[in-house]
Image (tube, rainbow, N blue to C red; front, side):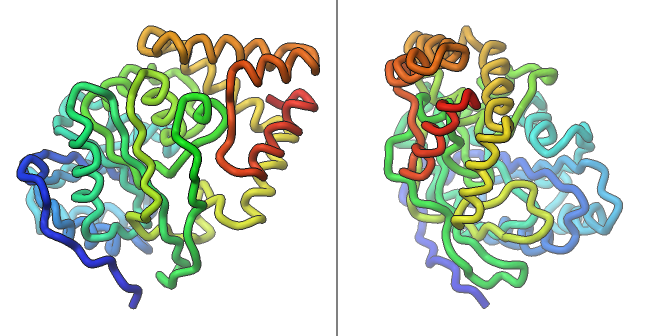
Length: 322
């Protein structure tokens, strides 16, 4: 049985009162869902409500959710029907749902296991920033296999979060993220028709680009299960990183950038002036000749978190795959 970090009593009275909406999406998740729900039940921060958007499960997922709802009450566990347009749009359907009201909003995957103090830790960090500025907390993850055995950790990033990084890289998984109300409001404004590569990357882009605060915690907050059903990998092994570099060369990375830039244009009025200027320079670089391209990229100041990622970015720029 894997160890769980020792929890501590909440350090802030305001943290105890904060309402947290946990946004869980499910799809045929019967194999691991109970363990994730149990970890939610054990949270040291007790003032939470769970909102589940199911995207058409045909296994026992709905039965498991109904049992959890019966245990905790329909006022605390609400079950909804997803849009059936993929995991990112399923999460965003919860973000856009006006009936979901809270002080903070936590993304939740169906097959992870939260550390008992996950909500408490992230709340304390966000509340230190105040309530007016858009802010998101995210962290590293501890990696476990299908049986829950520890197999490693996600990469530890050392460079500061920023919009210049967000343009070319997602910082952390949405399963670690906690958003405050202003950050949720920014995401909710994204049109349902806008292309979304991933909701975690979108959150990083929009919050950092709107003069918001992004807190990256190098200490893991959950167990991220690695198995054949994962839609997005951990990016922790050399194989994972090489796969992502190959995507740069294949044109996938260029298409992701194209989709992100299109979506950012839909919320341009929310972005600060510096971020808008960075976008202009980045877009010009993508269309410029080789020498001009590198000059514009340097002026834009975009960067990735690791040396290997930087090499991949340079190579992608060299062959016009930005």
